[in-house]
Length: 243
Ligand SMILES: NC(=O)c1ccc[n+]([C@@H]2O[C@H](COP(=O)([O-])OP(=O)(O)OC[C@H]3O[C@@H](n4cnc5c(N)ncnc54)[C@H](OP(=O)(O)O)[C@@H]3O)[C@@H](O)[C@H]2O)c1
Image (cartoon, rainbow, N blue to C red):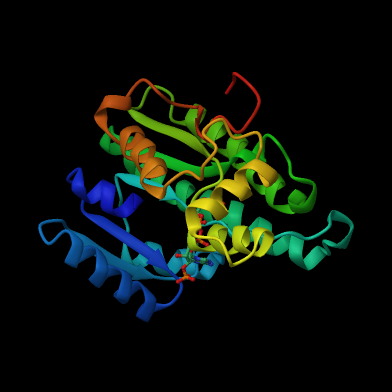
């Protein structure tokens, strides 16, 4: 949805994933849905330094970088071993750190650029069963603020988007596990929100397009005065006025 939104707004949009065949499939879907838009693909595992180097070799410059990669899963905090901590850190934090560090100097030299980090409500309301995930998302808020400071006065902005519970395949599956398979989706979603996400003020999952809308806005010239911040698309889930 983010790729589709950016392309619709006129950007030549490159999508990344680990598997070339999956990238090709998604590219074909995106092109079929919007034949006038410009899409390209670059497969690489950006959770590793080697994967980032391969992506940079294939794509040395970008004007807009959306650090969307993020893995999540429930594990009791005392069971999170060193290996899992490291995997979450490399995947969720270092991917964005390495890519931003590589692309920001070019954006600065050209006098325009946008870097976005997909954070989460879990960055500010750490879930007991996903501390290892929440930690990585909190870290992204700090990284994003720090890179924004490094870009002061250059025309380059860096922001985080705090996404709330979103209607992706993974989340629908998770909701189904909690409320059962019998109900039609609308009712299942309602049960999930009432019993498992009561803090949501919209009482429904956020649609991916709604996250994409914020990313497209922040990526646009309209958002030139927004930098170093964390903007919420969380359906009011986090019980706070700020950020
Ligand atoms: N879903 C939610 O409710 C929610 C809420 C708040 C924040 N977020 C955040 O939003 C972002 C997107 O979440 P999502 O739910 O859309 O994720 P998702 O459906 O699990 O998609 C993850 C994507 O990342 C790719 N990927 C995984 N590991 C990779 C790697 N090492 N290198 C390159 N690509 C890799 C996957 O493609 P391949 O498998 O083909 O590599 C897949 O396209 C994440 O940062 C997440 O933390 C999600």
